[in-house]
Amino acid sequence: MENPITIQPRRTGRWYFVLRSLAAVIDYVVFGVLLFAYIYYFGTETDEGYRVDGCGHVLLLFVAWVIWLPLPEFGFGKTLGKWACDLRVVNLDNGRITFGQAFVRHLLDVVDLGGFFGLVAFIVARTNPLNQRLGDLVAKTRVVEEPTGES
Image (cartoon, rainbow, N blue to C red; front, side, top):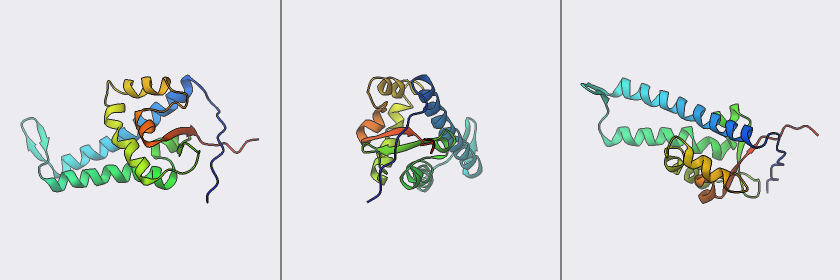
């Protein structure tokens, strides 16, 4: 059995939420750029812009989303954005999360981050003791700062 991660908070309050927000922005901006490039390359130009039709494209974009967000959190405990901000996703015992937990966390990004540009996530996280957004509450996970190794 793997030892749980020792949690030593370095920043509190506002800076913690700034880091979490920055990590989410990094993750979704990069995913958005990849999505835009895919649609531009494989899409058909219309009067309104570009359009991609067919279930195969939707399935491929869903797989890309799984590879970009839930899979790295399951394998490494973090996405590119969390890595850049020294954050990690852990279960409530401070151990590694399962793939199911990572998937559920990000499935609820639509509500958390899509609701008024992250306001839903911010309000929910500010009103519970572990700073969990809705996706974390349902998946039984939380985001913590990466241990520094300092004593």
